[in-house]
Image (cartoon, rainbow, N blue to C red):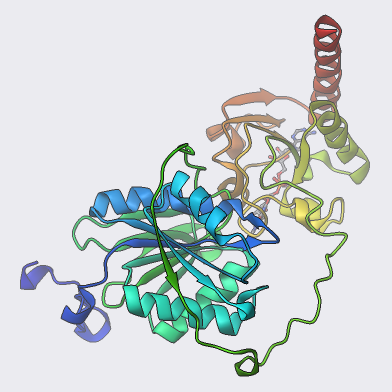
Amino acid sequence: MSEAKKPAGRAGRNLELPEHLKAYKGVWVFIEHDRGSVHPVSWELLGAARRLADTLGVGVSGVLMGGPDEPLQDHAQEAFRFGADTCYLMHDPVLKGYRNEPFTKGLTDLVNQYQPEILLLGATTMGRDLAGSVATTLQTGLTADCTELNIDPATRALAATRPTFGGSLLCTIMTLAYRPQMATCRPRVMPMPQRQEGRSGSIVTATLGMVETDIVTKLLDFIPDADRDTVNLTYADIIVSGGKGLKTPDNFKLVWDLAKVLGAEVGATRPVVQAGWVEAERQVGQTGKTVRPKLYIAAGISGAIQHRVGMQDADCIVAINTDANAPIFDFAHHGIVGNALQVLPALTEAFRTHLSRRVRQAA
Ligand SMILES: Cc1cc2nc3c(=O)[nH]c(=O)nc-3n(C[C@H](O)[C@H](O)[C@H](O)COP(=O)(O)OP(=O)(O)OC[C@H]3O[C@@H](n4cnc5c(N)ncnc54)[C@H](O)[C@@H]3O)c2cc1C
């Protein structure tokens, strides 16, 4: 890069990658698992990692950490099918059940030893906690809740895009002078890659070098929250969502009626959640869930950017709104200009008739 083109930070500081960090190569994904299953966001991130790595001409690796009786080998085989070339496995009794201290030490040690240029984690409860402490320990940059990941052709740096200023703008952040470049993405932000049966890779095992007495936090028990995760909005195939245009909680029942007939989940906008019509877990958008269903029906929703970022990647968006100029019609695949209080019951009835006819035909 010519002197004139060198990126300069505040006060003209040179932000070109220092010589000793040029050895950092490869794209890594922290593979999150719990009670025998891998969080699907890890496979989504492997898909993104594969794309970034192919642009850079480097490999993709997964990192799996857990207790001695956890099936890390099986998870690694699955990671290969989703695009990993190598998996780093760290088994240790103190890694059974997530705790920040041992996971931070394990991941930072692996990074320091094998030097990846990019490290991706899911923006889940665990991923957010771990990413922050790993980035701080490694003294590198972390871009949280990214909506897009690319490689900047001029610098070969990770260009991590995320909403800013309350979601009204998107900014692209690059870590030019530090390695690894770290980013988190929420579940469903990246598409699920195609699983390739028979694809394999190599396994590297590593040790943690930590004992229970080194760790301040103690895991005494696991008590599942009976009320949590009962709403599977993030991974639902069909979602019927309602907005403030439905006017009353009573009218919102029309959304539930249609969802029931379609076997769909119910979503909502933030004002609906704030009004207490539905629980917070059903909020779609920047401060709610990101969804990627095959069908998203939006009734009485204006299509504000903060809602749009959470559902714009749905395969098919059907919008029902009385205002033909509502922003949602700019990106919906099908629009119905009409009163949702009439259109929703009509759709419910039509689908009920259609689906029961299909059931009769199949019998
Ligand atoms: C930092 C920040 C984060 C936010 N995060 C989120 C988020 O995660 N998710 C989210 O949803 N919002 C979020 N918001 C709020 C967002 O900006 C919008 O205010 C919100 O999405 C609007 O919700 P709405 O479409 O239900 O209501 P409105 O904007 O009031 O739209 C109602 C729509 O219904 C239509 N309508 C009225 N009557 C009928 C009828 N009878 N039939 C059909 N249509 C009708 C109207 O024409 C209108 O378009 C956030 C805002 C900020 C500042």
